[in-house]
Length: 176
Image (cartoon, rainbow, N blue to C red; front, side):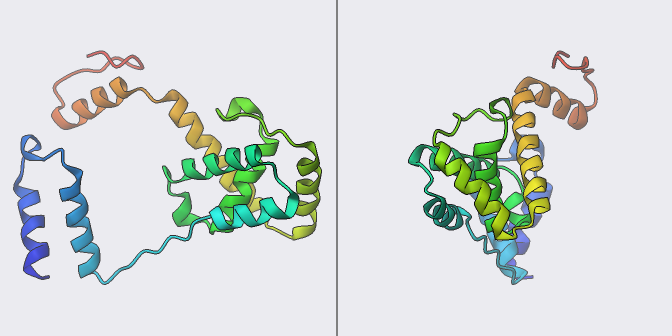
């Protein structure tokens, strides 16, 4: 390994928890050097182009496109873009925008009924792998469930317990 990777990584190993900077740019820089040294490149294709193309084909209203677009934005908080092709993510977002109950997501309900019929026909005729779309849909619903149940105080309490081991954590309320 070159010196520019070895020294930041070595310095990182010798730091204690009190010496880690809250500046994430230093961590990103170190990650960049490690990825570069490994000769690895990651290219992620975005699902927006597929979403726009299918939206034009089925005559999707602008408001409905915004709902699906927002769902796609939410997928970047997970590993879905690394695990599934972008067209599957786009079609799953469109599927969720129309066919999942509004309790499963926090977005507004789609507005156009004619698009709904065209979209059903398009899914039926397209030969798309609906099992993959169902898997991605389940992952996105799981992500929304985690966001709904997330409590920062509980996470901090459990991390303190793991790191320091001296404090006790009461189940579910984040108190020590």
